[in-house]
Length: 210
Image (cartoon, rainbow, N blue to C red; front, side, top):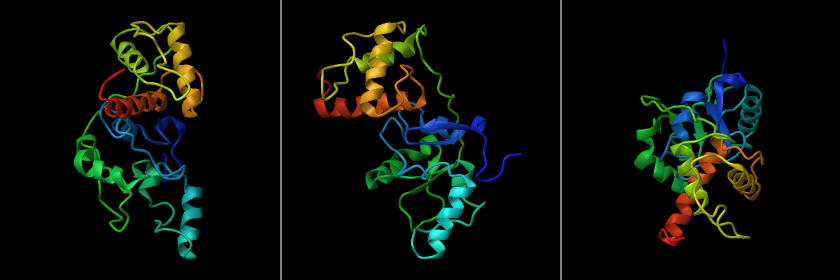
C-alpha cells in the first residue's frame, strides 16, 4: 500500500509543471479548469512531493531557512493533493472558480499559495491524442493550433483537422519545442493543458481575431 511521499507512477498523472494523484490531476486538467486558466505550481516540489523532498524542506524550515513545512510523512503534497501556486493572481482565480474543480483552501492559512484538492467532483482522465486519432477532440485542438501564433512565425496550422494526420504531428511537435516540452508530437495532459492555456491568453489578447 502506498504511503505519504511514496506514491507509485501508476497513481500519479502530470499537470503543467508537476504531477498529482490521478483524480486531482484530472480535476486540474479538466476543461475550463486550473490548467486551462494557466495556473501552475511554483516549482518541481510544489505539487506531488516525495518523502525525501519533504525531509529536505522540513530541514530548511527547522533551520529557519525556508517556508513552513509539514513533518515528513504528513504533508498533503505527499498524497498528491496539494499545489503551491506560482503567482498571486492564481489564488484569486482559485477563490472564484476552484471549488467547481474540487480545489479549496483548507490548511496553511498563512500561505496564500497553498491550495488543496478536496474532491467532490469527477472528471475523466485525459485521453491522449496521437497520429491516427480522430473525432471532435482532434478538431478542437487543431482549431486552437490554427489560432495560436508563435513569436517566430504565424499559426501552427493553416486549418483544423478531424483526423490526427502528419501535419498535426508536425504542428504539435513545433509547439512543444517552442514551449520547452518534450517534442513527441503527441497531445497528452501537459501539452493539452499548455495548448488550452496559450489559446485562452492569445484569444483574450487579440480579441478573438486570427
